Length: 128
Image (cartoon, rainbow, N blue to C red; front, side):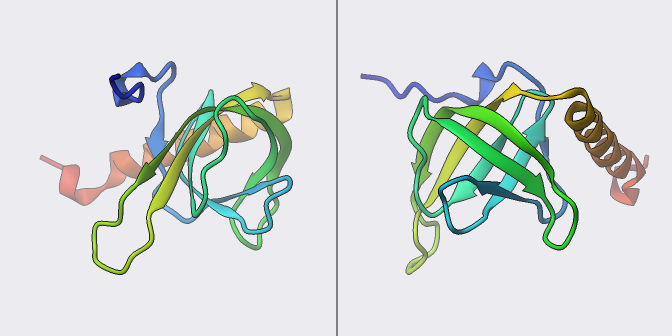
């Protein structure tokens, strides 16, 4: 059987986050790091996997700031990455597709994505 995960099966554009952003998932005690975000969902990094198809209620935010949420989504994919260095624990990557995004939350996500795009456009190493 072939692996069903492939990065090119994305249904929406995602951006790598250039700063530390977290997601607090209902029922999970520790916050998880958001690695990628797009208008349709997020990819989170955690110590344990979330189950494919599960509904998740969550809040997005940076530590010490007002979060975006509560929001609802479902686990679209979940996979484990083996440690790259000896002694490191494996990392689980989970894609969460947004189910319900209210207009206020959608506007805040769009603003955040525009800020990320603006940071990329201003990077000096990208200048000709």
